[in-house]
Length: 347
Image (cartoon, rainbow, N blue to C red; front, top):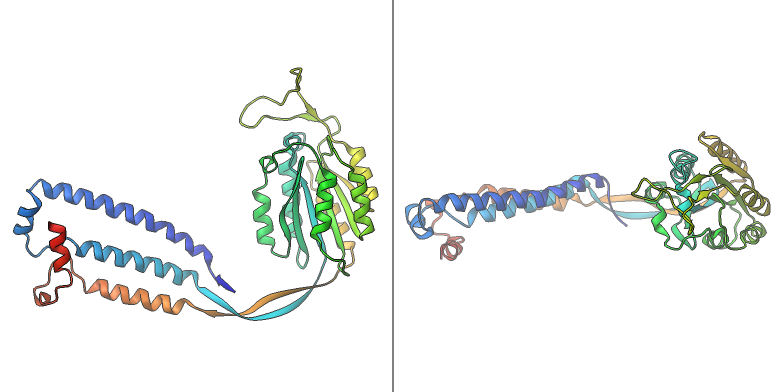
């Protein structure tokens, strides 16, 4: 397995297009200023020791050296030894509602962002567990297969929006079916599905799907987002709200009854999310109660450093750059490395 020990240094590669742009700009200015003194042929006769190609060669050498040194700083490594590790944990699939109604602001900043905050805290509290993510509205999609990579989980979580699923609706049953399949074969590891939704406009048999999960020894927890009296749904990019065909403002309300039925069918627990952190604490406590079994995973335990070859090549380039002068060195005129290129440039 190949990896960079310090991938943050790869952002230095953004300097390369900047350096190229600066070089092109200064070259244009230099040529423009030289033309004020005469034609290129005349200037070449007046400055016989000036090379027109060497500055470009030096720049390309320096640019390549910067690229190699950036790779050195990032520390490329190859994994050489794979070990199987056993960890105590559970497997959790999150089914997150991303329908437009989740943009209602009866919880702050809105239902979806509050749900993402709850999930972020939940991931931060995990150590040896595995987590996956399914997003749904009128359809359901796997956003993140079940994994122990919490960094990736939080990265995917931050990118979630209501634009991820084009067809509107609340297909909770479809999301539950997809989450059940994401676990794979049965094993001794405790498994749970956490559904986060406002439960509005559900269009399939979600309760039957929750019962199926329970039959497969998967506990279904439900976090209800929003308030019973509801709130209007903002239209993105405007100051107005969604309206029905008669021009009335649509008020989205939490369907708490459906959420409770879902939790009962899944032999889990229903929690109402408000502006406090109570929902997070309750769900975390419930997950901690679940039996924790060994989870096997394969990891690379040893890595060989591969930066040495890049460092040596960068050093050689810098040495070559040091011995290339902008002007033609009379003591090295017998070497015609740049002579032909200069003639071509002048012509």
